[in-house]
Length: 81
Image (cartoon, rainbow, N blue to C red):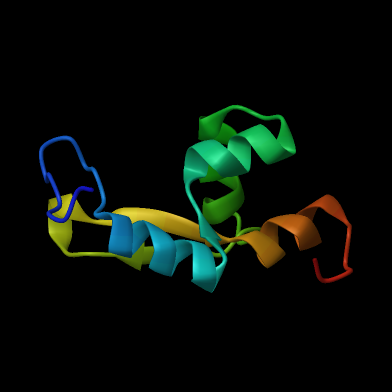
């Protein structure tokens, strides 16, 4: 069980992964897979205000996460899952 974060490889500890899952946050790669678009399209959605982003961390070590509910809303499926 990994307990420390490896900053160079941007790995999360198991505790952090569980916390993000409980908060309903997913990565850009997961969002792109759900929406069936390229990851650069996600950047355009964020820049255009269609998809809010949650940044975790500081400066260059910052990571971007997205609420699963926001992605579902973007798909037009407004029911809570």
